[in-house]
Image: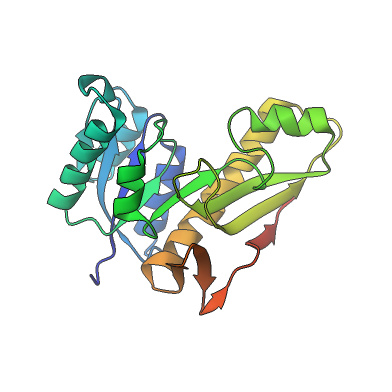
Length: 215
């Protein structure tokens, strides 16, 4: 599918979505943003999508008896838009094994930590409490195990002694806006693939993610 039609799944304000929209507007995104889908009708990211002229959809998870039933409805909507790749951008739902299996190798997420460190929530506070010298964000393939798929690209920055969790979160989010569209470009252009449970970039297995340094 030459268009690399891509759906972005959101639940909130959509700042990462905006990064993709901005890259597309600058003609520096290798994918076509073909659908923005949210589980919340009040997500501000839907406004961002509307302002950019992107198709949107809302599927309320509360209307479904199980995660898989909800996920099957999402998949049906993605199929209706001929979606090839799926980007999770603040989508606050744990995906079912069925859904992950349908899109394995075509499904990316970004996590605000240097995985495998600090999977889960409250990463910035945990980094500060541990006294870590570095923090950052990781783009990874999504697998059934939460935040455990093969890592692709990391943005890393030093942790200043005086920084608080809110400022650290802001700085890490800025990094996400830089690295996440780049990872999608790799995937959409065929440079990045998922092979036998591993990330492969330019035909080389990534034993560890590509790391970019930020200040």
